[in-house]
Length: 140
Image (cartoon, rainbow, N blue to C red):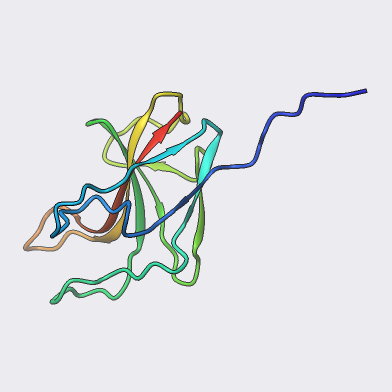
């Protein structure tokens, strides 16, 4: 007797320099991730060194953000000592009026950004997000 069991293993996105969507000095275009559609995906930061710009008042990232289009922004905490994160509807919290995260769909293109979110101050009335790494993920 045989049965068909769906592949429930979550795809893995590994943070690296090749996928970092920054302006590269040698004009090399950053790669994009392409992963199969599942309930979510895992994000590994193992071995990646986040460079903190000079003059910053923080020493490490504290947030992972997902940007979908212009109107959907979601986040989860980046925790010191943790290098594997599961990004799915149980972990992603809507930000700035975004509707609740309903999941991924085939054909979706999103941005994953890891950085530091500083709270508002008297000088800056809005929270400030400093991007330390960002990559594009295509859901197949």
